Length: 321
Image (cartoon, rainbow, N blue to C red):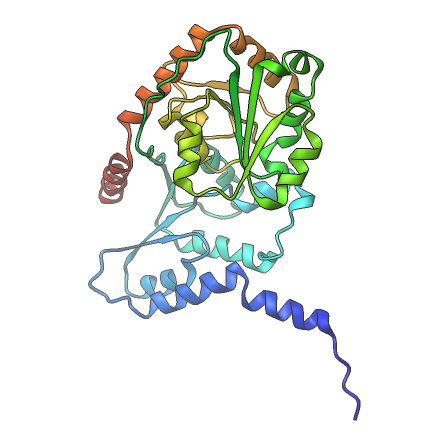
């Protein structure tokens, strides 16, 4: 008797079993066994809600759903072909639609996510935007002066959604390379993206990989400007983290800046525009007073809305809906 061994089938079964979707589904199934009828509502996150909501509906318990990423149908329309996630098959994405269908109220952290839900193909429950809070705030001790180097940062991976192509094109532009000795560039990313940034960016840079969160904040506190060129972002907590460390954030309207940019506390730029990024950097390089003013405004914004405030808004929204 001859048995043919197919290692690819075995690998696929292994990936299916340990996939994020399968793990979340197992957790949801376990949590559903703990539900009792005296509960007023169930609060669950995307990918973890389906089994819990099924049981809750049978017991007439209100289902509140938090979606913290761009709705998958909009992401599909953006055609990020290079970032097909092997941990989420099409069938797994349809689970999100089932979760939404069972929801009584949907909580999202940004207008961008709320807008993406317009592509949901059926009746959409009420959607409320509650922005995430800022971490602990710290003023920067150093003031940026024109004769100093402008300290610029990027924090994130190199997937297409992050818009790194446009960041790299801007940093490699002739006008930026003319002043490259007056810019200190720091990049915080993962180990896989380190070589990519190292090879693609022509100017001198420091690349940090896999830093603990505390060290990320410490490094932010020593820099002036964070660039967030994202094409698609559910929220972008790196923005609020940077502002809490008194950084000037240059970011697109596809980040949470659309929700929290006010009182001259940041700079919003259009997506997919490397020329605007380079011009904005040069402008700020030559206007230190404005840089310091915006950094101070960012800090002031961050101290007014903490995670405690987020929780209070969340409870109030749940109780009033």
